[in-house]
Image (cartoon, rainbow, N blue to C red; front, side):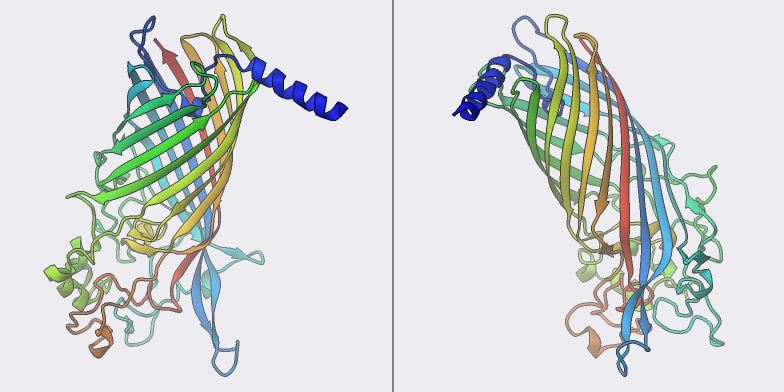
Length: 450
């Protein structure tokens, strides 16, 4: 009985402490109402994201499972992508708990690097299927003598540089339907919708002139490439938050859809040039099918959709409501599902192509610290660490029904052959896979509120 009384007392204490209070930062919204007819939030945020992972490739091993052999994954590359961006954000209160916001990012750098993997203390370069490749996109020997023709350059630290340009503009609305600050019987419930405009300059991964070894022209930091993907992005989200004394648990769910614009890149944009026998980077039949209107949609970029959830809580060790001061600690866990796609992925800078990517799950956690010095000034800082489930980075289908009745090499016309299919990347036994990933992100922001 004593324990029950203590628990009841603790619960009553939390409820008593939970008087009117602002929602968690994840649910903060600019507002315009009596006594505060104009609410403007201006922030400048620095975002840094680092993605690292191992790229393996399927390889036939006849010594396994005799007499049939087996396909195994062999280590090929270590891949790193580092992005740094400055993001000014403006939010204006239009009505009570209704805001319009816009973000105008500037990407300082978005650099993609790769090198040969190290196994047992030694580089895999000597045995690499990338360095020892001897076929072209049609699956035929690229040199009659059998000499190797590496897929793409791999140095001690090959880097393709992007950035130094404005990113995609994002704008949207957020509405706090319920507020626990006004009605303590309800949680704070926020719904929002964002639209990302395809304003950043489009990145053409096959833009040249590429070197004889198929190296990108953007391997020099003095010649950074654009990074825009030229797609419309639609993001819908909802957040529930409920302040209970010194804690503020919350839940968020979101879904992001994408639609191609008139400027979205397609492999078919360069297919005719890539099919030149001197390059051997595409099949002649694939180039011909790109010109066929029947393949127009099926051969274009296939965009992913993303859905995710976040669970977390803010801990408030200090708060002075009369001075509008607050210190809060944010702890959260999140998971996002990314669907299958034919779009930019870690192979694109290396191969000069969009690739078919398998669905994957991203899971991680975040720690944040938010300091509100006064009604007008706040500082935010957070760090997160996540991982992605292993997934294939290549693996196009050979084509439509009946493709095997024709020439599947692509050397001669075959109306059913997938224009994107490349025997070096997409054939079972040669596909690339991304695993052992880590995604580390830092974010620091200053906020002025008027």
